[in-house]
Length: 291
Ligand SMILES: NC(=O)c1ccc[n+]([C@@H]2O[C@H](COP(=O)([O-])OP(=O)(O)OC[C@H]3O[C@@H](n4cnc5c(N)ncnc54)[C@H](OP(=O)(O)O)[C@@H]3O)[C@@H](O)[C@H]2O)c1
View 1: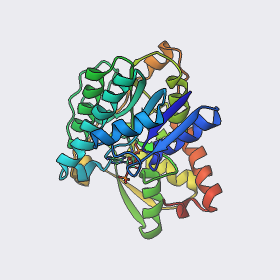
View 2: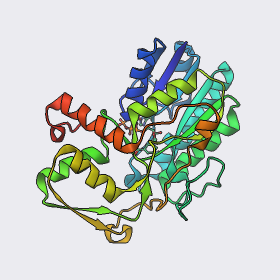
View 3: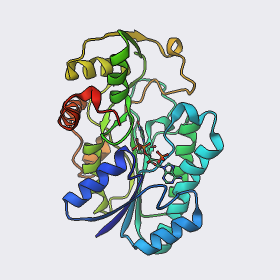
């Protein structure tokens, strides 16, 4: 089996390629240099040349606040990109895994979102990722849409690295305490995607590490795990004042994974522990591991 993985220079794509190779599945990792997903003909040429049995599409425009001022580019990458890939997957009769996000929901209430719940994105990033989902659903039958959240991996920028970096220069760090979700370690998600891609259990899934917390609670856990002493101050979303609107409730139900016979991801605390260990192993000091 051969799988083409987009976004190999990013967090998730990198670990997906590693995981597939570990399992003896041929993985061809591409990023914008090899296959610009906004270039329809380029996507077709790359996929035809590679001739994979499936695509795991991890590339995206992921700068949530910057997206508010770069709507057109964000839409080309997150909305049209998946359509370009899905079109060729359809013609080649191969499967596609589209990675999506908790930001397709409006974040109201406290109940964990089910895969079939209505989407109502509140930001440019969320809206364009939703358009990507729709494009895949309209084009293909053999698709998985896997919504994840609060991603951290070795290969790229994320909240964990940002916190450790800030702690180097700040005695006090303000962190939002009224948005709740589940952190997700790319190594754990990569295992699930590798399990999934060899099946034909198509559909929409939610996949994050188990358990949930606020960003403030996550930050406190990061500093505890890394042995870093810093004053973390909880603030409201309004007090923090980010450009893009973010869902207050990003809790997502993973029951469908169980129903469909997939192994769920470990707890986010367990994932964070292993991630900080990974950073330590690589740099000797987690605070020095900023990618
Ligand atoms: N990060 C999160 O917290 C989070 C949360 C929920 C869902 N997700 C979803 O999870 C997936 C993986 O996220 P991630 O954090 O691994 O992303 P990432 O680290 O930002 O990596 C995305 C990769 O896509 C590349 N890319 C951008 N535009 C492209 C184009 N036109 N053609 C080809 N490649 C392009 C980027 O290149 P450049 O760096 O050069 O732009 C980057 O290497 C995405 O679908 C994202 O929407 C992420």
